Length: 314
Image (cartoon, rainbow, N blue to C red; front, top):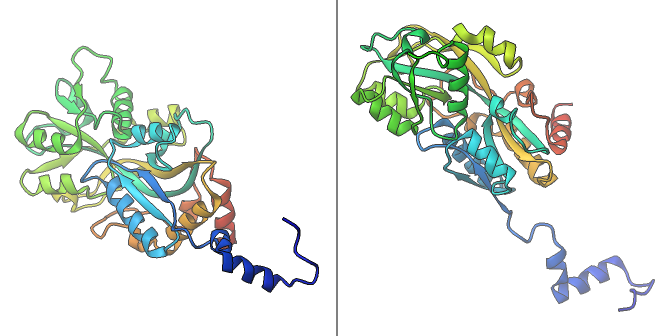
């Protein structure tokens, strides 16, 4: 095909393209937004709840479509991301630090997870040391909670002794049921507070949450940037006093190849819809603030996310 004549105006060329349907193909807003799968977590857990809120906010924006997937949590999400089976993944920062994905990047630090070690109030268990000889669910197989719980028990010196806890890995719903019936003595979970399934259990069974910060100094020696001291507020699960526990950052992750426009749209959603992304019954520390969103250590920000944060915040 010969080039348009010099006298042909740009308007005429565009009009001609529109007449042949080629302009529609060239338009940037004709095709609907691509759907991005997001590795989230279990039903009744904070990951899936957040993922659904994020998907709703994305739909309102008209710029993205997100599909939150039920998974077993951080470790599985990272594996799915590594295999390019999801475009986005929610993960605990400590799990992300061990990811084999070479181009792992973060879109933002979205909220803080609380490590929760829950027992029946009538169990006589008051400290981590009291878990010796007891049956303890670490979390779902392949979950970040299970990996963190194993680190906590190891730091407490409970895994290398003959009379240590009997550890099992259970989905949260199963673990809650077994804690109620006495089939297990304790469950670990990492998520926002209150976690709906644990809150529901507290309505029928008196619970106690254990202080896990007794092992924090040893954990920090091994993983200096992964864990902080925090507290589960009074009133959560019926507790009358705040309970000291370990906090772990939760990250929204991608691979560096994720489209820059999609990443910029996600950053805008995290900033502009921050309030809508916090579950209405959430208590305690929530992130989605300018300072915390960009604090994704140990994972670097996606370059497009870093640019968009600079554009929005200066």
